Image 1 (tube, rainbow, N blue to C red):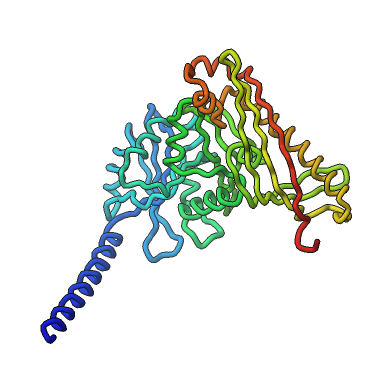
Image 2 (cartoon, rainbow, N blue to C red):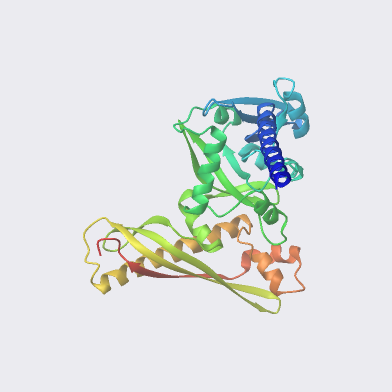
Length: 361
């Protein structure tokens, strides 16, 4: 019995020692490296790339250190800037990667590929476009307790979960980037004083930026792309301005192929709740509610059709209609799809169902 007790004590002491050492080891690792949490890619003279890193200063709240450099390759910038750093850089905690609009117009394939090839970077990284200067953004003072990289991460995250941004991260975006029959898109950010704002969604043809979805149309794009909820929007009806909360919206796609040519029918079912009215309306009267439903539905149909028209004019397919066509049509050829895309019929129909009108009712 004594022998068993001694063995148990030895195991317990060993476990405590192991976990204590593990804790110390982890602390030393974190203390001995510069954790890159955000990166901005930009163009420089002579076709070089400018890279700006932001690293948190440990135990200093939202204070950060910013490093920047220029070279022919991203990895070389990292090597060069490490000559200025008191500790080696580590990218395992990187949370955001931004590309300036200026870079995106020339093509971002090389910078994007560098991120994907870095085995230390995980799924938690978000990519976005930047209107403006990377150094100004990362060195800016903001009205938040978070450092700038975590601020951007949380800004994107909550607007994906309950706002108008489509769900995304580096690896979801990579699938979209390389998928045959779909064009790439990412959010656009801009510094506004002591805040950072989402100003739209950037549209790409291959790796080049060619246009944007306006801020007011982002929620329409998300509704056409994926099911989501908890987003609010204002609509003008015949009787008043109304703010509607999206309880749940689900897009349904139907594709018909005749003689090798597709037609798309997108039906979006929207369950909503009235949050606010600009003037008093009796919502206990079912006729009033139905009139609001019709007005909201008309506006959504019109906005969605306008958005599709914009996509066709830019010859981009961010909804991945080509990929859906490919799934249903085995002889699919990408070049043929690109030629026919502008003339493909795309019909959109919303069904709006106002389930209740808020807490009072």
